[in-house]
Amino acid sequence: MSAILAVDGLSSGYGPVPVLRDVTFEVPTGTIAAVLGANGAGKTTLLRTLSGLLRPTAGQVRFDGADLRGVRVEALVRRGLAHVPEGRGIVAELTVEENLRLGGLWRRDRADARRAQDEVYELFEPLARRRRHAGHQLSGGERQMLALGRALIARPRLLLLDEPSLGLAPRVTAQIMALLRRLCDDTGLTVLLVEQNVRSALSVADQGVVMSLGRVVMATPAAQLREDETLRHAYLGF
Ligand code: ATP
Figure 1 (cartoon, rainbow, N blue to C red):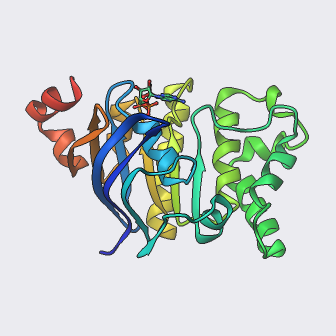
Figure 2: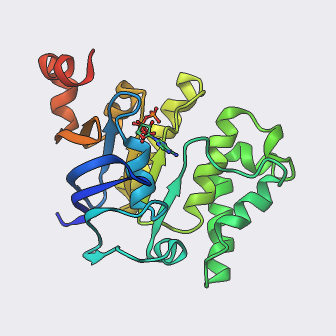
């Protein structure tokens, strides 16, 4: 299987403060990789660097074989990379419908952007019912659906998701994880999932990428982390 994302020796940080150090891993097309690790391990910084918000100080990111260095954010979106940031990044003052339209802003194919919007309403029925409600009127679960839905309108091939389970009831988290699995299996979407909720991430992931102090300390099949208690104790602390 080819890797849609190949990260090689990536380092980055905030100004002079280094955070990521020599990060290397690959994500095969159509799979889910869970990025795990304690607070401050650098997971969010990794997503920010991959989506072009932070400039790498060293290393390379290949997306579908092409080097991403210097590619602008909107060009990344057009190539099929979508980032749902921590805190979800929806606009609280805009309606559900308006937020979704923002997701299609860079789409040249307007007709397909509208089709994608209808698909999001089918996928997330609560959003269809609340399409004229403002973002701030939504529940946590609905906000997460909106953030995900908005990203899907760009028809991404690689979705970078930061803490989708944050603040959600376990049932809603399970629904979102199941949806991600289905999208990967049915459409070939690839997901890089940052999660504090290690159990739920490992329940759907194909691969676990464990980070500590800005480095990848292990990248291994998720099944191994699910089954091997010693490994889990050593790297994930449970
Ligand atoms: P969390 O789950 O708490 O978000 P994380 O693994 O995502 O943790 P990061 O948010 O990537 O970790 O943070 C990694 C390091 O970078 C931390 O030491 C943090 O203090 C630092 N850091 C994060 N954001 C900034 C920033 N805007 N400016 C300077 N340092 C930052």
